[in-house]
Image 1 (cartoon, rainbow, N blue to C red):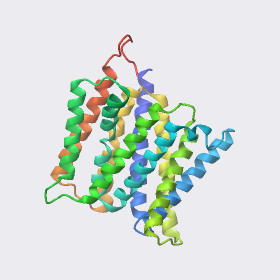
Image 2 (tube, helix red, strand yellow):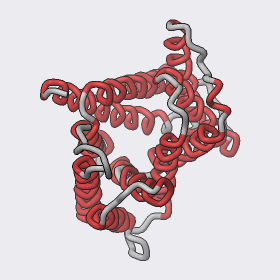
Image 3 (spheres, rainbow, N blue to C red):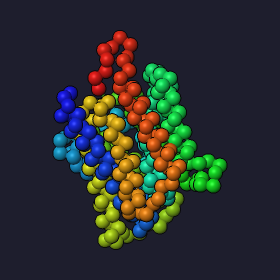
Length: 297
């Protein structure tokens, strides 16, 4: 992979993270004018329809039969949990805090891959994982005056997404990105239905509400497409660390649009999470596998 491919991949990844950050802003605003569960459900249905149409245009079934296999059923369960708790966290807690905690997901994946799949993780990467978790604790501040139990929603969402990624490694790689998009937004719809069944209060959205829902769905789909392009354009080891630009966009948007003022603990914890995450990614990319040449991706 040449340097221009890596640069394009990094650009797509950065655009993807910007799209997801803007999606969070639209969703947080939508949850203020309609029931949270309804917002999640409608965005999920819109995204599912878009990807189903894309699959139909190339002659693919929207729902691949592999979705009924055990690994993908497990993946779907984790995705529902991740999307459910992350949506609750976005709506009920500061965007800056939720986005910072979400960045710990790759660290959980590294540790889980070592424990579940026997992947080699040296002591330096384990130390980086520990530092990243320390960053999460600094943000949460358990036992201190600044602790909010609602911030645990972001932790639950982060663990759900990490479980989804780990289950994906064990799942058969037979589904296209379009079919994965249908499945992902279907799980978002399920999460929304769960929230709505508990809270109730279904309403007919007004023009502002519909606009916010459209913006959420639009940037969700655009972010997903840019993410796919990033992973197909550049070397994975080079492109993946640019995922952490999402936190930068989220912090800027949270401060500019919602008047959030992250405190010192949030900044320090975020720096530890991002720094340790980038280190584990770079270190893992450089570590050769037994009997294999040095990695190039």
